[in-house]
Amino acid sequence: MPHSAQDKKKALLRVRRIRGQAEALERALESGADCAPVLVQLAAIRGAINGLMSEILESHIREELGAIPEAGERGERLAQDMSSLIRSYLK
Image 1: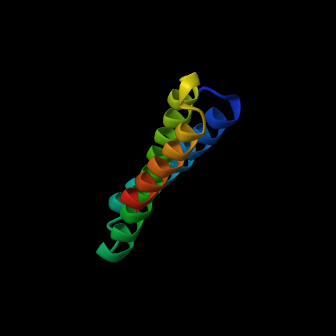
Image 2: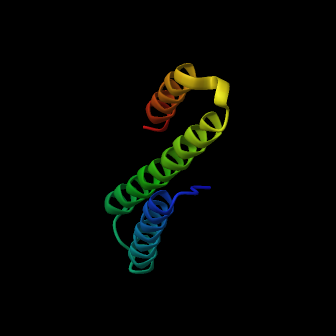
Image 3: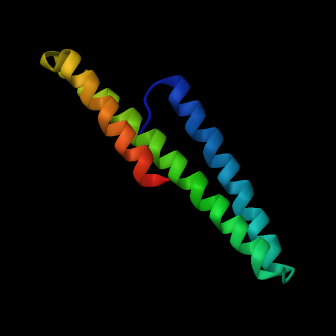
């Protein structure tokens, strides 16, 4: 869970965009849209969810490693490495 006001605001904005995408998908399905646009919308939603997950995981890693005083510079490097791995995995 993002704890800083800025991270929380970013996460909520992403959730609202995802909700809008899901509503657009629902309307497309109800209207009998062709498969291709529906699949594109699904891919967009999946990308948005992965982006949100990445942001929240990165925030969690930074907060947890920052709470360990003895982690210091090594903790910062570890947080950067883990965040990079998460981003590449979720793409």
